[in-house]
Amino acid sequence: MRPSPDLQAEQARTLASPRLRYGLLARLLFLGMDLGYGRRRTLAKFKVLEVIARVPYQAWEQVAYIAMTHTHGEPGFARRIFDFVSEARHQQDNEQWHLLILEELLSERGEKQGFLRFRLLPQLVAFFYYHVSWLLYVIRPRLSYELNAHFEDHAEHEYMEFVRDNPQLEGEAFTSTFEDDYGSFASLADLFRQIGLDERMHKEESLARMAQPRFG
Ligand SMILES: [Fe+2]
Ligand SMILES: [Fe+2]
Image 1 (cartoon, rainbow, N blue to C red):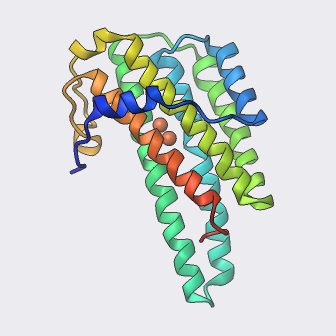
Image 2: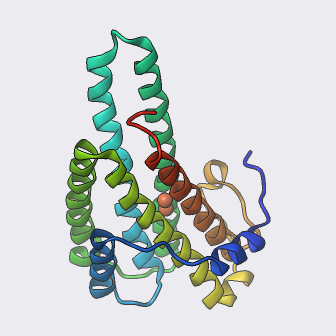
C-alpha cells in the first residue's frame, strides 16, 4: 500500500513552484509535442508523453547491465549498480502504469487515435529519445539525468495544471483494471494529482543522481 499523501496540497505545491529552466533538447522536445499534438493538455497528448517517459530508464538500465558484466569481480561496485538498476526499473514500471491507465481511459471514452500520430510517431520519438538518453549517459551521466529531470518537471506541471483547468474531473470516478497495481482514488482529479506527484519524485531522483558519480 502506498501512503496516501494530501494530493490537493501536493498539487498546490507544484502550482506554486516555478518550472526548472529547461535546456535546449528538452525545449525542442516540448515544442515538437505542441506542434504534433497541440498546446492543449489532453489525455491523448499525455499518453504520448508517457510512451516517451519510460525510455531514459530503459537506456540507463541497459548501460548499467553492461557495466555489471564488466565489474562483477568487484562485488561492492556491482552491488551499487544493481541498486541503481532496481531504482530505474521501479520508475520504468511506474511510468508503465501511467501509460496503461491513460490507454484505458482513452478507450473507455472512445477517443480516436490515428495510427500515424498516436502509434507510429510516438514510437519514433521514443526511439530517438532512447538513443539521446543512452548517448548522453555514456558521455556524461549528469547530462542524461538533467534531460530527464526537465522532462519530469514538465510532466509534473502539465498534470497538475490539467487538474486545475478541468474542475469537472473532481466529480468523475476512477475505476480501472489497474487499481490493484496502481491504487484507488476518489476521482480522476486525484488520479492525475498522484501521477503528477510521481513525476515530481522521478524528477527529484534524477536531480539527486546529478550530484553523484556514476552508479553512486
Ligand atoms: Fe509518467
Ligand atoms: Fe515520470
